[in-house]
Structures are given as C-alpha cells and as structure tokens.
Length: 482
Ligand code: FAD
Ligand code: SF4
Ligand code: SF4
Image: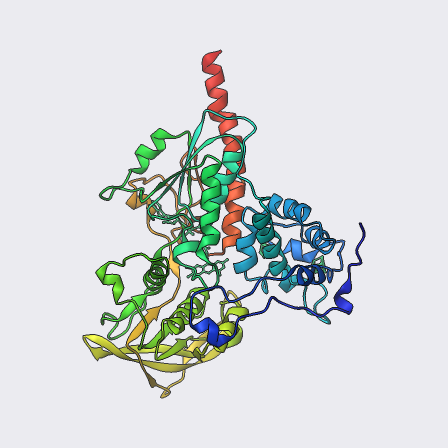
C-alpha cells in the first residue's frame, strides 16, 4: 500500500491535546491526551522520509523513525510496533518522557520552515495501541540456558537488560531495595508525566516472561541487605544498575533549618501518596498544601517539584535559578507547562541565606548576572552587588542534582574502580567494571542522565554480558566436561 508522505507542506504540526491548566492542577494524571487514529496517521504522514534521517541519528537508541512513521501513515500499526520495539525496550515510556525537543524532534530536518514531525507522540501512540490490541507479548526464549545473572536495580537500565538477557534464555534475577519495579520511573518522575500503571504493566510482562524480581532487597552491608560478595557468588555474572541517589547539597546560613528538603524525598513521598501508600511520619510533612514553596534548581527534577507543589495546593510556588531561561538545563516544553500551571520563575537569582526560627520562613536571594564562558563554553554567573531580596518560604526544596553513592565503600569492594565523579568505570565497548564478570549500566556509569540512555546502556550491556558468558563461563564448563 502506498501513502503519500511529505505532507509537512500542507499539514501543520499538531501535538496531542493538552488538558487545561486548571484541570491539570487538580490531579496527578498525565497532561497529554492520546492521539486519535486519524490524528496519528496524519501527523506521521508529515515525514519527508529523509535518506539520512537526522531524527534517528540523534535518538540515543537509533530508532528507525522514518519507517515506523511511514507504516503508521499507512495504517500498518502492528508492523510499526514491530519496527519500533526492535530497538526500544519501552517505546511508550520514551514517547512520553524523552526531551524530544533536544533529541529526535529537535533534529528533524523540516525545521526551520516547518515545525518538526511529532515523533514522540506517534511512538507512544503505536505502543499504546499495541498494548490495547494484545500485540505486546512476554519474551519467550528460544532456548533455556543454565547460567544465571543478577541485576542490581530495577530502573530502566536494569529492566532493559533483564528483557534482553531473558530473551537469550538466561535465568535473570533482579534485586531492588524498593518495593516496586521502575526506579525513578515510579518514585522520581511524577504521574503527570508518566502514569504508574504504564510501568506496572511492563513489570507484569517481564515476570510473565520469567524474570524473577527480589523486591525490598537491598544489596550492601546494612541490616537485611544481601552482601555484594554473596550475590556475586550466587550468579555467573552481575549487572550494577543502581542509578545515582546522593543529593547535591547547598551551603549558607540557615541551611539546617527544618522545612528545607531534598527533591527526591519530596517527589518520592508525593508518588507514594498517589499510589495509596501509608507514609512514614517523617515523610508526612513533605506536602506543599497551603505553603509558600521555593524550589532551588533549573533541571527536570526542579520542574517536577514545582509542578507537584502546584498540584498539592501550595499557596505560592517559585523556582529560583541562577542562570536565565535560555540556559536552563530542563526541557523547554516542561518549563512552558510549569508556567501555564502557575509556577513563578525567578531567573538569574541564587539563594544567599535561609531565614527562620527553627523552621524556615524565608529565603534571602541575590540577583545574578551572566559572565564570560568558562572552559566548557558555559557562561559563568556572578552576584550583582546590593541586589538582595527576600521570598516567603515554608518549604524549600533542593533540586540541585545527584551524585553516585560510594559503592566501593558501601559494598566493601575496594577493587571496584570509580571515576573522579564517583561513577563506575566500565570498558567503553564491553560495559565490564574492574571486577571480572561484573558489568554496569545507566546513571551509575553516566551520572544523572536520561531514561532513553539508561535503556540504551542496559541493552548494550546485556549484549556484552551474553558474549562474555559464552566466551568464559560456557567455554570453561565445556572444557571441564570434555
Ligand atoms: P534508576 O532509575 O535510578 O534505578 C536504579 C534502581 O536501583 C532503583 O530502583 C534503586 O532502588 C535501585 N538500587 C539502588 N541501589 C541499590 C542497592 N544497593 N540495592 C538494591 N537496589 C538498589 N529522564 C528522562 O528521560 N525524562 C524525564 O522526564 C526525566 N525526569 C526525571 C525526573 C526526576 C525527578 C529525576 C530524579 C530523574 C529524571 N530523569 C528523566 C532521569 C531518569 O529518571 C534517569 O536517568 C533514569 O531513571 C536512570 O535509570 P537507571 O536505571 O540508571 O537508574
Ligand atoms: Fe525520540 Fe526518545 Fe523515541 Fe528516540 S526514544 S525517537 S529520542 S522519543
Ligand atoms: Fe522524517 Fe524529520 Fe526524521 Fe526526516 S528528520 S525522516 S522528516 S522525522
């Protein structure tokens, strides 16, 4: 069947409808509606089918975007799903939360002149339809293998690797200290970007495919934890996919006051509340209702915090960021969503001190100006003398980024090599750490990054683990038998 593509000249770009800001503020549901079938077909047909598709080049998974756009435009959705899922383990998740404006869509060649093809929304539509129609099936390995693999961390890196390794027939055991599967997909990223049943249905599929999950099982030397050495002795190979969880801190007078909280504690409490969990007493106060909230930072985490506070019914929500809007690390689309929902931004402003008696009541901030670019090309910032101002604040949330936990110390593994940033060192091609048979993937290797990169790393690490096991474990066993 042929369908005319290249319709970008006559058909304008259309993203899926967004719920009104008033409706969005009232709940934690996703803000984008689904494409209807005619909308998806029409939007997919805007693609010009480039010979060298820059969208694919800038997709970390190298997705075959033009092909699944053409198949969607032709109504051949099951085939589109086949092509899309061949390179992406969780296309419906990437379609929702990739910063497309910086990746695939940001590099679509019909821009400038025309607005980019709506790649992410079509990717999401294809896989949501595939789930509805029952085309998404658990993995069925062609052969079962005797070797077993431990994966530490059930975030996107660990899950992508689990899927690939199970497909190869290995016994796959995933260990996670959390009680649910998904890592930051569940406890970091709020429901208005990614509803949690989307992650839960992947958990179910993986389990149906034979992946064994050990939830609530931390790896380490703490109480109730399984030691890394023990884990290693039980399995033929190990993948570390533990993410990065050490919050970056801020200094300054008053920083120890009550009411100054870490972003991830705040977001986890909110996500748990939405999931119906009973919160421990220390987490119950992590609620913005009726409060003046000030969020420090300008990345995706800060955007998630300000928009969560709005939904919790905060009296006011302000975001303090030391650079300007153009230099914000967060996705421009998310900043726009936050503005629509009522968040006020204080650009070029940084905290100087936290004021209050026992509990924070205000933040004293200072205006900043952009200076000359530093060695990385990024403009430096410096305070403007005499520009201090004060913001009322009953809740201050620090969203300043994350660093890795010190795994070699926590796990008593002094030979586990780390970079100067504390991330695990791995071979560029084989993803193996300094410990033989121990591999690593995702944020613990890259530092805080993106879901799509975690998926990519998880898939690549799995391929490398398969090669290593075949060359080492299987070959050794054969030699011993023979
Ligand atoms: P994680 O998702 O962090 O998963 C690691 C898992 O390991 C966790 O489940 C953890 O419990 C487990 N674990 C850790 N240590 C142990 C241990 N010792 N024993 C057992 N289990 C352990 N990216 C995007 O692409 N788009 C977004 O919109 C986006 N928004 C974000 C919003 C927030 C608030 C945050 C914090 C991040 C966001 N990111 C986003 C980044 C993205 O979530 C991460 O890059 C991605 O989740 C990394 O995947 P991972 O599998 O490496 O680690
Ligand atoms: Fe775009 Fe992300 Fe999908 Fe790649 S995975 S096509 S970057 S939305
Ligand atoms: Fe289609 Fe844009 Fe990709 Fe070209 S760059 S193949 S027009 S989506």
